[in-house]
Image (cartoon, rainbow, N blue to C red):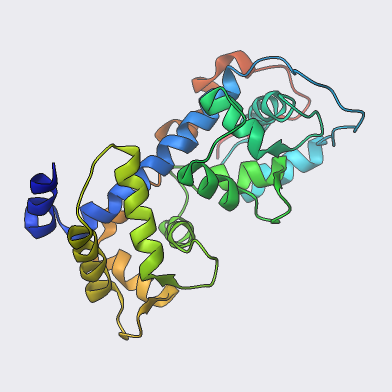
Length: 255
């Protein structure tokens, strides 16, 4: 297996394709989250906390500010409520609820699940509320601009949230990918991938990749964003017809 990765390190894949692989486990987690919501079980435990309600004006506002239609936001709200009640019924998704939905256990660690949760948790308060959920899924919508996807992909690698991507973070992400795929490579090959990344992406050679470096790197290798789109988010209600229901809010007629 190591020899296979040795040839990979030399030239069998472009640098962009190697780094693109880092996004693949993340998009799989996001994809699995949506499907886990659709088949999530009834609540196991109820709390006395009243779940926050989303009114029609809130739903209309989210539809105006994202690529989702009003009916799609409502469908996502139904999906969200199922998962947010799976352990604690407080109107928020806890990391344990996400683990339970994906892995059938609230315990354990997974770097990619942790990164998805941390990036969805935009307020950094340890839970994901509905607005955070919709806005984060919107990143993966086919109509979302490449600039938004680019910013999200930068944050994916910025594990320590310092505003820079450092060598240790790239190594940690690549090592986690290999662990997920049961591949074993030498430290030498891992170091080669990291060195090649910084050779091409670290424009000012300061040992860190800042947002401007990353922007230029993605422009050079646009395939890096290939795994930042879930095509079925273009029409959520068609993908999950069981969550279509009568609504007092109607989508505007197309122009």
